[in-house]
Length: 217
Image (cartoon, rainbow, N blue to C red; front, side):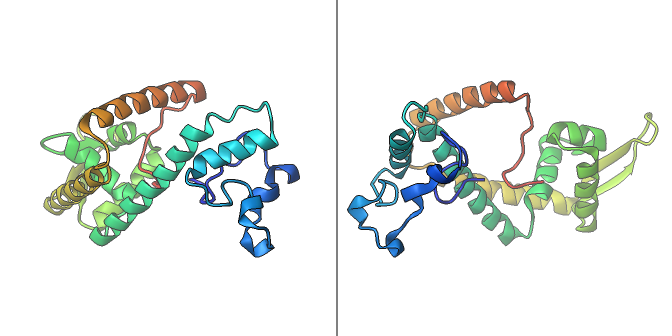
């Protein structure tokens, strides 16, 4: 997750002794604010300060990615932390919500095989088994042997699981819509398009199309 100092490990040059320097020294080191690096001096644009400091310290190394990747890391942490706090109020963890959400989005009768759950959740069979067992103990799902395929297992939402996922998702989506309130509808649409484009391209470059909740196993 995001480095709370704002810098990314290895972002433009590595983390050797020369990569640290003044960016890690604060007022407690006795250094006047005006003589410290922009990000340490509390500049109005901390991300720009990080990029400028690396541009000064490592001339020729591309730093443009800092202006994109660092805010994404920070937003991921902010959104992830806020979601975990909201889920804690409902007494549900992100992995369980993911399981319940996949079942609820499947439509009536809200039943899927464990194999299909793994495919849609993009997690391993072992992770699906753990999630289902935990949700079953909480009375949120029930499982039974499937028909046709040998050793097939069907997992269904219970009435309590159906109620919990709808109430929780409704609150989460309303909350996250509020957090995006600083953007106009047009800005949201444009940002969603750009993020989708970036995500698909990075997935292709890394050969990783896995998706999941931030912080979920």
